[in-house]
Image (cartoon, rainbow over all chains, first blue to last red; front, side, top):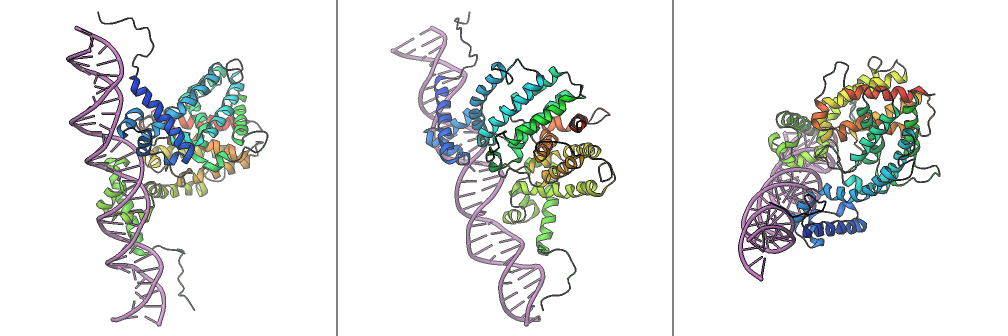
Amino acid sequence: MNSPVVPLGKPRGERADAARNREHLLATARAMIAEHGTRKVTMDALAERAGLGKGTVFRRFGTRAGIFQALLDEEEHRFQERVLSGPPPLGPGAGPEERLIAYGRARIAFLVEHHAIARAALDRAQPIPVGEVAMTRPHIRMLIGQAGLSLPHPDTLALQLTAALEGPLLLYLSMDEATAPPAEETGHPLAESWQALVERVFQAG
Amino acid sequence: MNSPVVPLGKPRGERADAARNREHLLATARAMIAEHGTRKVTMDALAERAGLGKGTVFRRFGTRAGIFQALLDEEEHRFQERVLSGPPPLGPGAGPEERLIAYGRARIAFLVEHHAIARAALDRAQPIPVGEVAMTRPHIRMLIGQAGLSLPHPDTLALQLTAALEGPLLLYLSMDEATAPPAEETGHPLAESWQALVERVFQAG
DNA sequence: ATGCTAAACGGACTTCACCCCGCTTAGATT
DNA sequence: AATCTAAGCGGGGTGAAGTCCGTTTAGCAT
């Protein structure tokens, strides 16, 4: 017989020291970002400031982008919670169109708020920005499905709407443009425009 | 009196040797890409294989991404020509909706064909992928304007449609996904889906 | 407690993008 | 043709990402 009745839920839990170091590294990274911006967060500097070896940093995060993805994932969880079980229209309980509009607005706010980190989390090596986008596409896909639109390729449209939502902030807008104009009381232009886009897409059966 | 009647159009022409080297470098880069893919095109390797100094490569292209941007620009010119003065519906002469659909289809084909280079041309330093996108956004903006849609922020919608069109191939799809399925005779799913998207956006006044 | 081993660690090493600056040369001027 | 100089050139230098591998240690088994 092999094993004790370990009732826990971490099938491949990392070792205690490893977990401690991950936390410490993330905290250090956050501090460095707050002080000098993402640009100055180099693997060497991070390792040194955390008092750990560079190899450890790479073991934990795999890649520089991985650090920022991990950072983002923490926030992402809170966000995801609001979407999966928060109050409508962002959470369940509203119609698909309403939810999709709310999702876009919330997502844009999220990306604006975490703009620097979100961009730093992009890794031009691997094509799919893992953490972030991971939830947007399936969520949009689901809402499109619920709406029962007649489309040639719902999966593909979901992908294109994902790009329409996140692309501007990840690819095209500069730091200033993205962060600067919270001005108008109606909200971010991207949010207004997203709503118009969704309304038009949902309009026809 | 200053000058001879040089009738030509290069206000700040580069020196003959410089131009020759640029061509040579681009040709060498193309060869290297064909043989081993973009990944193996390093600045050192390119310089060595071209028989030039590394400094020269940087002087000509500024950055690694610059090489791929230059490579893309050549193709881009041909493409732009077709859009600006080719036959409709891609060129002028058709209605805005028809033209936008045609533009998307052509653009997707273009990006699929040059997928590797287009991705390598992305530069995570500067936010705006200069070469490529440069023409897509204004063109979409113009067609939206011509259609006279009533929108809160036409410029922003143009940006979002640009992202919807180019984002999937630049950000989200892997090499295989992007290149693989030319299968169906109706065309690339991205193209079909783009058409549906545009039709819906244009549907309401 | 003691031993065992897989996991974690550290830091030197490699590779690559990009910088710097003294030398060379195209090509305009006379 | 000879001269002059701005532009071009070369390649060694620097900083940062990512790899390797020998050493250390957490945490289980006895």
